[in-house]
Length: 257
Image 1 (cartoon, rainbow, N blue to C red):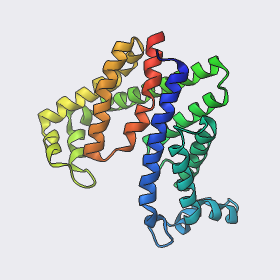
Image 2: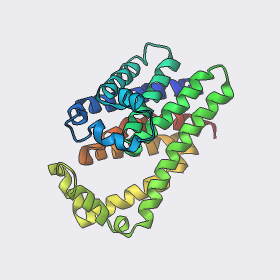
Image 3: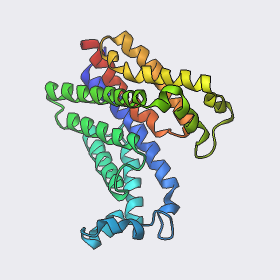
Image 4: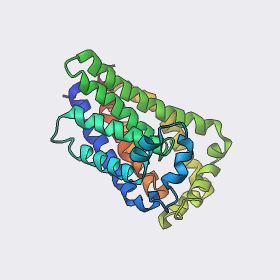
């Protein structure tokens, strides 16, 4: 039986995987953060003119950033075997520092969802003896997840380019590394329009997932392939585990409404 504690445990494991993935990706780009790279601290620090120079340079400079990423990776890898609260607090603090260095989320919504889930799970771990706070954190994660789908769907619904399918075709054609060969068919007008309306319907109707565990499971069964397809076609791999981490909370809340 899924309980708030078990839902939070599953969430911690999933968000730890997301943090491992994000940290490894950023470490793979470390050359771009070096002094001669496109993300050199000497360029980014101009936006931190009011911050103590020595502290900012030590923490957010190249060596400091690499140390933060390694610490973040280690904390995430330790989640299955170490006490929850220290790991979560380290992941949350280092994620905020990473966002600070880039003056916002490095990868948009996935990083924002990661920080949101880490914040909720950290609070739950800090108040492990309070069933009310545990339940509140589970509901917070579930509602944030539902809200994210709903807003994405409403934005698409209001945009004529999404309703006609043109936007999806543009996104597929404009993939950074070019669309995968099998994905080019998605840009065909009829296919693009059908898929666009499928996405709009899935996202706008996602709040229904909270009504019943079977409905929730059905929405998750549709949403997960949706995220995997986005990772395959557009390279949005960070979104997969960031949103998977919210599914245990969704399943629990759908069972008690």
